Image 1 (cartoon, rainbow, N blue to C red):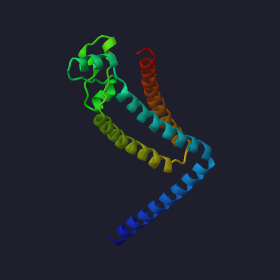
Image 2 (cartoon, rainbow, N blue to C red):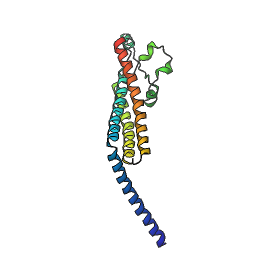
Image 3 (cartoon, rainbow, N blue to C red):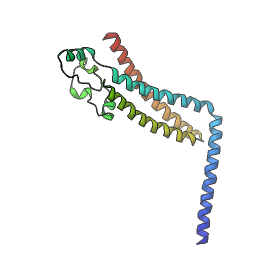
Image 4 (cartoon, one colour):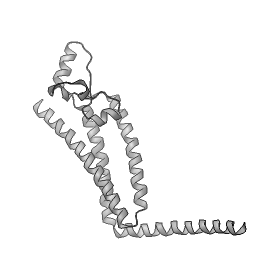
Length: 178
């Protein structure tokens, strides 16, 4: 029985030593590749800014003629989400589900309360994702792990960048061509 207790104590001691050594090696690895990790941090900031920018642009793009026409008639204006993923996440009606023409598909959600709720939900999602990134960043000590974290950041950068510039293009065309 004493031998079992001693073995468990030795295992705990070895795990503690392994944890300390892993932290030390990780710190050295990060110091060796400081530029790459700085670049990844900057890209993570851009990812978050792109996402919040796309969310904000999405919520402020509207079809002005339709809103003015409905307001002139005294009708309630209905707002719809164009991006299918956003409509599913925030429980909004998707424009594709209505079977409207291409001219009518420019309508977006404009309510400030909905925007703030969406921003709050996105903040929680991005806090979780950034926490996961930071935890994994603190444990990187091999090139394989470095490539995984670079792939993670590159994937989300492409995803959010595409969404932001897509929404920005729609906004610019809306402003330029009405």
